[in-house]
Structure formats: C-alpha cells, structure tokens
Length: 172
Image (cartoon, rainbow, N blue to C red; front, side, top):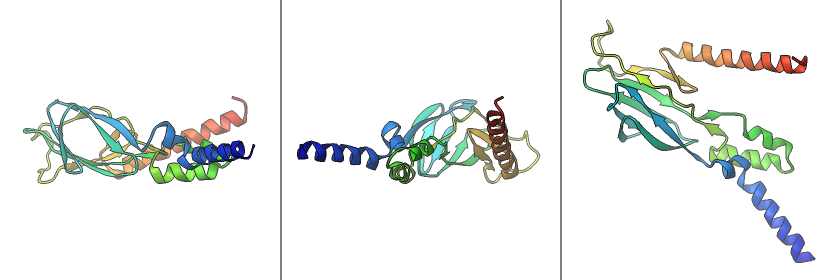
C-alpha cells in the first residue's frame, strides 16, 4: 500500500513538474516563411534560408529576421513568440501554479504568430534611399510599418477581447 501511494505521488509530481503546455506542445515551434517573390534570402539569428522554408524556433527566444533579394528593398523585423493564454488554464488545477511556472520558464506558454506572405518592394518603388533594411514590427504574423501601427493592432485586440467578455457576461 505504501509503495502504491509513493508511486502515485511520484506520477503526480512528474505531471505537475513538467508543465501542461510544456508536455503538450514543447518549447519549440515550426514556423513557415514565404515571400513574394520567392527565392529570397532570409537570415534568422545568423542562420541562412531561402524562401519558402520552415524552421523550428525556440518559443522563449527572440529572433532578428532580415530578408533580402536582388532588386528588392531588404526587410528586417524582430520575431517574438507571445503568450497565448493557454497556460493560464493550468492555474485552476491542483498544483497549477507549478505547472504555469514551468510553462513560463520553458517558453511553452508562448506562440509565434503565423506569418503572412511577406511582399517585397522592388528597389526604386519608394522615394527614400535604402542603406539599411526597411524596419517592420511584427504582431501576430502581420508586419506593421511602424511600432505605433503595431501598438494600435495590439490595443484593438485587447478592446475586442474586453468587448467579448462583456457580451459573455451579459449573455450575448
């Protein structure tokens, strides 16, 4: 009987200690990068790829992405996995705070937004001279021309979520 209780305790500790999302989806994510036109060179933290391609990225790491193709304006942006709310559900479980903490540390609580096809601009199509890549700001897979545009998209999502919560509360 004592051995059975000990075995059950070990199984429970392993389940709690590994983190729910860490077990379900892990600390890495496959992401796909497509450009229009294709065959662009993409450097992701010093690794070079040619579009279209898939790469496996660590969810807790930030990535600097630079895209270039002869005859087109180069593009750069920071690609960051963001919390998607899935790990917060573990907080209602017994030992949920340990599960949640594990998911935070492993990065499993985050997700990269699915990137839309990145349309490259032919050189000469913009009036500004390009000595550096055009800097963009990614949010949920969409590249925004300014950080203010990205912040506006983030605020809109938060407002939409608050509106949804209010509707649910009022039975709509």
